Image (cartoon, rainbow, N blue to C red; front, side, top):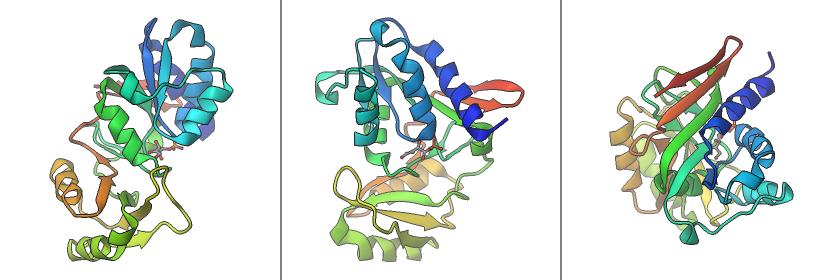
Length: 218
Ligand code: 5RP
């Protein structure tokens, strides 16, 4: 089965979590795009959406789905998004698409975070995928030096600006044996906007697709 087919199956499994009248938090990336495609078929039954990126907001609107300002939406019942890596503890690395800050805001504002992914994203330990960190541009050198002191290898994501006007530093070889502590440690660095570890607010449900079907981890 192709990776796209697996992503679509994970995305379609998440549709079962949507209730009539929900305002749905919607993630970013190719797996989330399949979810948007599925959501379009039931758009008459939801009250609207909150998007975690400009790209997803555009895609939702192109499907005729209402996109709301999160500041007017209150607590969201559900957020559905993909991940770059996921563990069985439902700790994630996100931000491969650069939308990590808005993704973390929407995740935090949601009662239930359903993470959708194909089985290739499941890892025993986070960190093989370079860890994205959104940084205020003037802090690029400062943050890079601090990361190097921790043993990571920082690299500026070339030619990329986030929806918030910031840069992304991707970090290789970061020790993430304790995801919650590393998330806290990196969050505290001046100039860091968001670190792509989602462990303090982990996913509540992980829907992993494989050739043998959907595995639910919660
Ligand atoms: C975007 C993300 C995505 O969820 C992550 O990169 C996974 O993307 P895809 O579904 O395309 O594999 O965090 O910032």
